[in-house]
Length: 71
Figure (cartoon, rainbow, N blue to C red):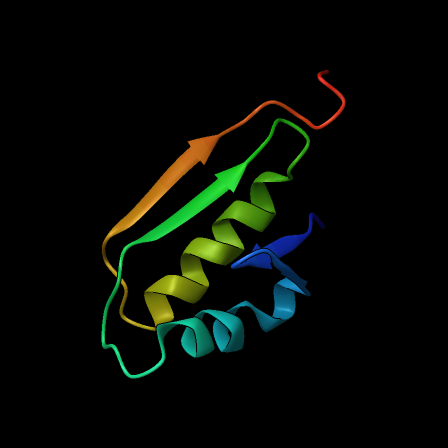
């Protein structure tokens, strides 16, 4: 599965709930931007969206970018 980074720090996708929760801190809600390139498995994006939903986040955006090697 693809890699996940929160605030630039790479984490395991299975730690997304904990990582997003830690990034939220004391806030109950915050905007979340999920960015993926064409090489990111759809499953990884859905997993990140599910983790955000479990934490009650509703302001979620999904963006795309070119792969690092330009393909």
